[in-house]
Image 1: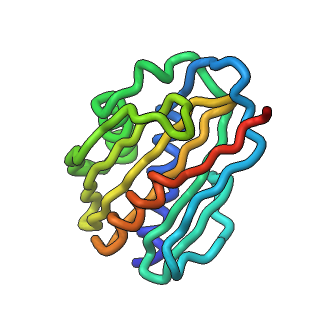
Image 2 (image 1 turned 120 degrees about the vertical axis):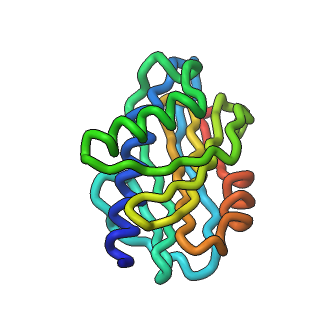
Image 3 (image 1 turned 120 degrees about the horizontal axis):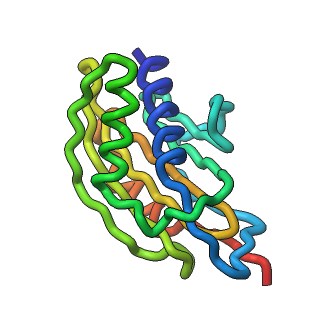
Length: 167
């Protein structure tokens, strides 16, 4: 069951990155980043993501860095939800997705959004918080809580994401 949860979480992260293309900004070249992790999360290699940390319970944090596109400002909760529904529908699955919140709060002074939602897919329930930042590239940090125990820690981590830009 842990492998199923990890696979689903990694798939969600990739889907959200693909759906979250970003617009061009000037002089926002990120040279490094830092994500605070709760105790118990260990770095692992996960196919399809730049960096990944997993907990024994199946919860995880993924960072994905991708090239930008020009539609960052068009992204909202409905666009992301529709993309997830379309993807899973194409695979023959029918998830239940319940939005918790969507904000456009900047991260490190850069345009960003935060999308938090609950999802039930084939009997597996989880909550995801996706933070997407529009810089020289698209920086997407996806927190997946499969137990219901991590969301407060994940939200605190999201508030402390650091993107170090070139001076």
